[in-house]
Length: 371
Image 1 (cartoon, rainbow, N blue to C red):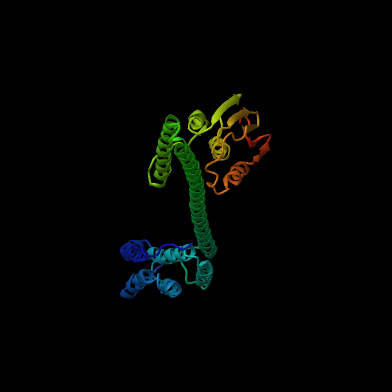
Image 2 (image 1 turned 60 degrees about the vertical axis):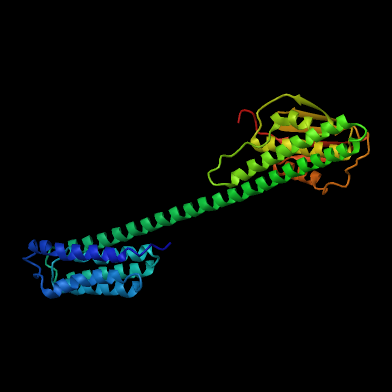
């Protein structure tokens, strides 16, 4: 991961102020064994910060010059102290920008330079061994700390990317679910509208009252499809509240406007996970749509059995008692769509003729009630 280096000019200014401003103070405690600051010393103090200003464009060259200037400053005998800030910042920037090899090479060379400098007897600030151990420990601790910080930043970046990827994946899955919901809503209600419109046209001359009932069903179905479309589309708007999708509590309403005689039975009762309840509703909805489309006048029985580990759904019709005047409608994707819904939850669905009619049986797995 690369560190943003747009702040290096400001960083260079801060380092320049610190090195030039504090070095005279550091000089007072080292008069006995270090040389006083001269114009050359102040010039050397400014070279490191100047290299930080161009670090973004010339990272390696500016780093090498910064360390070379530091070596010259030390070998000239000028006071220790703020001069080391520029190379410390350079090492940190190199590591955080992914140039770890260059950083470790410069750290190793710096350690060697200081050990040779002390070994030649030029260093007069204390015992050579103490000096060697102190500079070695400082360089090692600093490099390890910088590496740990780099690792921490990379892990946080990976976690952030993982969260973003998971968010995109969930958004994609949500869009697929909404697309499937919208497809089912449209397919069911448009089929119902077509069925009732065909019935109304067939009965309007001889049985106008029955035609009126069919037209009333068309009105309700069109109102519902508009409402559900609005609910789904609202989810696509940023910040829009998520409206609940149709659930099993609306089966009676679904049965009333299905166009066939429906009996609903519940064997047991328990709270259901939202995906299971939605799938169960859509399976019943599609089955009633198929019954109204292909078996007008039939009686349909819907049975929901709540087991310990699965929900069993059975929808059976007794067969058509009048011609299907709307048989040309439909894409033939109803049963495969129901199977896909059941399979997506780890369940199964079987559909086929049963006696004179048709039967759909689905099993949807449920979690344990105490989980």
